[in-house]
Image (cartoon, rainbow, N blue to C red; front, side, top):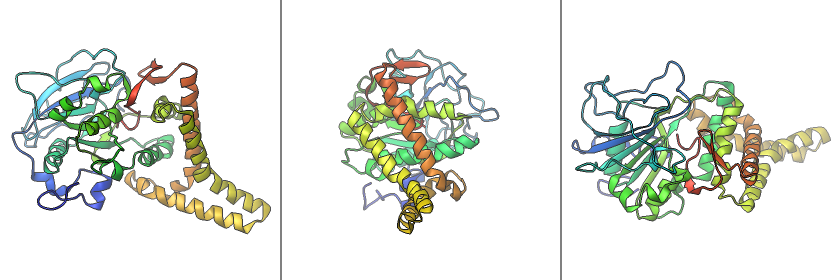
Length: 377
């Protein structure tokens, strides 16, 4: 982020989550126009949840949840205009051809006057009433072309509590937020569940044509914007949540494995390195502890316990973010084993010709970058 003058660098807290800085909360232009594009999901949201709408005296809204099986796009909105909670969410439109899924693959509506920003979100993402205004304010205050927040995923069932925080933890290992947010960095990523994109930046990046066909289209979008000279920012959301349920291990397995090998660019070398790294960092320490206990080797026991403790400590911030008990960090080796198996399964599916899967459809060839099951949140 720029420093000096009115462009303050994000605080340490905001660098990890939220918007780039709270100081920009009131810096938005009241005349800013935004079009919201919502990608529908085949799986309905969890019972009892709903998309939050703007209060009548609030600063705008991000749109309502379209019915399951439809695709709603786009709706022009002001980032500060009040609107009744009962207003319709938008008008239906056809999907773009050759589009695996995700809102970023659809272009903006070209009306008489293009909006300044596009809000790309999903049908199972709930936005707090002030989230749109905060996104616009942050983008304008820091001159960002893309602001993305990784929605807080649901953690209700036992499997969700075990796998979801670790999923975001590993995503942050793959795409470190500080590196993503550094101007000029070669690392680029976004979370498709909540992306505010400057329309002029989308035009410069050739969106949607430049990312059409990408399976992991949120990451592809961020790369396209950065390659065209745009400034991007990615963080964890505090007021944007996903209500999509993953009740059991099979659903979570599909979420990860459908695009894991795509993230490794279908490279056997990267796959081998990833497997070796997971084994060395996450599986060897508990093995050393068990071997030390069985063999009475205090050196192996202490070394393994120390490495296991450091590993668990590195996961504590993510568990706090998801409001989970700290002791769950001790299960990280088991979760890492699950992710190793999911990644290998993703590679096997690719080499069997099944490819990545999206909404029940398989894609054997994908554009670079794209949309993950979780990163899209």
